[in-house]
Length: 286
Image (tube, rainbow, N blue to C red; front, side):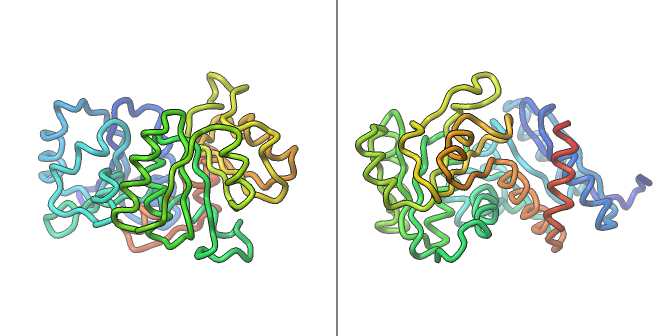
């Protein structure tokens, strides 16, 4: 590409950062949409975050993404924070606009966009979703679902207190939208009869232990959507079991895709073609 003094700068920051697929996605999208911009991976230690933010302001960055471990710490360096991101307590996207840095969280709505077409005739007001685990992006997803207007978010975790705490945080703003249950077979069996979507937000099934699963195959019912936030491997043991049981399945690649597309839209006003974006991510994984 032809980089000039007018080329707008964007970035993803984190520690480590080498594994990020965001540069593959956003540089491809800038090219596809003929936007004069470049997206850089920037590794930064927590103790250097403040200096980096000063540098971004000086260089007039257009915006940036944030990944582990800076999604919470970044908030103290921003001028404004979207109300939902403030409630979640984490920011993954910053828009630099008229001298201000404005923080958003696109993780939860990336998840919502990735399941909308798969819900069929189910209206969001009638949607009950079971989330396994409290790690990673679960808080963002659970709060975004409550804000979106689903009937109920049910959270289960091996440490029940963590699930109870998250449900309580959700109910402070969206009264009655969340509840916690023990991660025990009898409790899970009772709620699975009435949910339309099961989401794995645990690390069980990742590439280092692909045989592990957070849910017994016997609990999965036909026709339900089983969604695993893991995208490597693309088909975890949970998704294999769900497919065998006649459930619909989806991995976390589309959540990664849509949170990125929503960030791109915040920066440029353009919502890119999802098929182009997905092809860019898949190419980056090869």
